[in-house]
Length: 322
Image (cartoon, rainbow, N blue to C red; front, side, top):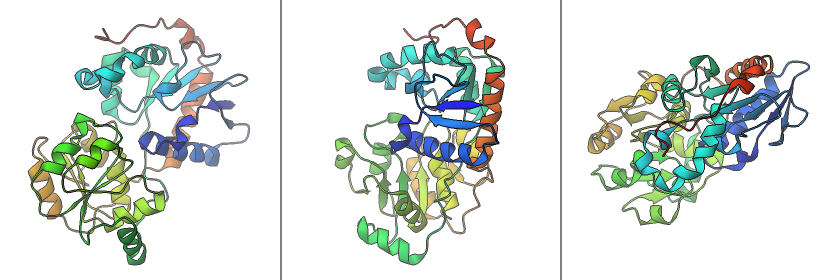
């Protein structure tokens, strides 16, 4: 089976880039004889086309299409995404016609059913995992990144993209909340983030540096109101760092009892609980990217043998799109 895989997002510094890089590597490691993955967004001469991001969906692909939907927050929280909502509407139309949809959690699967009217039999839950580069680093590496990024001796950590403000992630409110320890925000930052008070910004960091920054943190703080998976929480645990998060169904599903949870609106309590966190942190979930790849190969096989499903679909706009 030849799979066309749209890998254009693999250079993205956000979670979508991590997903593409890790899954693509694992797909090649787990491919059995006769299966291959070609990096292309033009799926000619392929038996299955997989777009791992919404930007790559096609309304009329020449072969069965698999789409990964990491979340549908811009449908759930439309008032926060007015500027980008319009450009996603046709993409969601195309996603509705996919032969199969992959989501990272059961919570997102429920959202996809509700907001896109996609039947449960066309949805597969395939969790994400920490990359192999995410493991506890020694004191020498921690000291190196502390010097390179001018980090405090002790700090609380938040990890993610800061190019544009996203109200659901509540980074600005987190920066302004009372706390006992310095706060480091790791990730590519836009101009707005540079105006946040009393925080240390690292900018974009390499994976090895990020693992050392995780390892040196007192705890990871995760104040989001809504997520598709919450990959930084799993990466932090893989590096031996405790996680404190605001209560959210997705994070409960992913982390179980591996994190400390506080009420969604209690950012001061979040920061206080993080300052009180103690090592060792619980181990991350045992799921790996190779496990994810094997499950994804199974989805490809299912899509390849049911091409009629795609032709039966009549695209509709998501509920409440206008």
